[in-house]
Image (tube, rainbow, N blue to C red; front, side, top):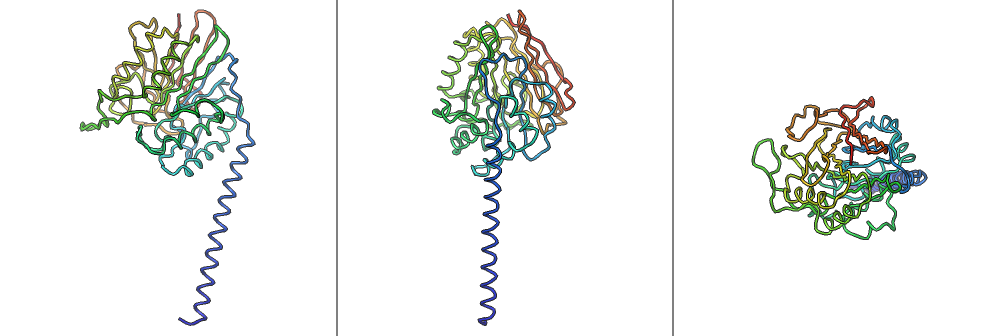
Length: 361
């Protein structure tokens, strides 16, 4: 090769390297700029003294899809928003990529409008955990947990950051008008599920498996027994009451499902209700637990950006119809004695697809 061509190719290589460096620096600058803009946005402060009358919740939210439900959610003027998992779709072991996805979600204009005016709490499910249907053996769970807490604006000095897992609790309101929100971590400590060989089913019950891990069980028992709240909301990323479908649910670990029911009964906690996500549908399930003087509901709201439109799965505990449209959940609390709580599954036009009202003694 002649010196002329050698010089020419060397020049091309240097130009390419300079271009790549410029692109990399540009991307880093853009990422930094996006984070700086987010830091200028002020998340609504969690006020433990506030009397809650309206709570909104939801799950299954792809950061790269249209998000048409934030405006109808805001139209309900909620006092609190509760994420129930799959808050983004990460499915990655690359924590920088995961962080970028959280930033993308926080940049969504309608969601920004929500978190600037409505306090936000939440827990993860599998896709924001980092691996589909993942459990305790996911090796990036600690780093992923920290990114979730950053997304939720959990203070760096909060006690949750000093322990394993993502479980949390919050108390709102004065005596006689208290709501406790208990958010369970169904990923970090969960045992392996048993794969099903039956067509149409993914898992079978694992009679020896555990959902929460002993430290989280001890914590949950204390949270329930010591609760003075009139309404105790337990957020679980996966369904607690449903037991017929073949996908993720507490019934895949039946000993844990029975243990949480017995814990509710023995604790004497008032007004316990489950909120869940994961299934890409909306539905209301009900069960009567021995020793609990009111029916216990599981309100599943799953499908902020996408749903299983042809979903048709069995649920012997379902009240009303299955909702296979984009949906979010709303809780309305009437504090006049006896306390009446109405649970709604709503859609794009803010219409209620399913509702149930419960009076708690």
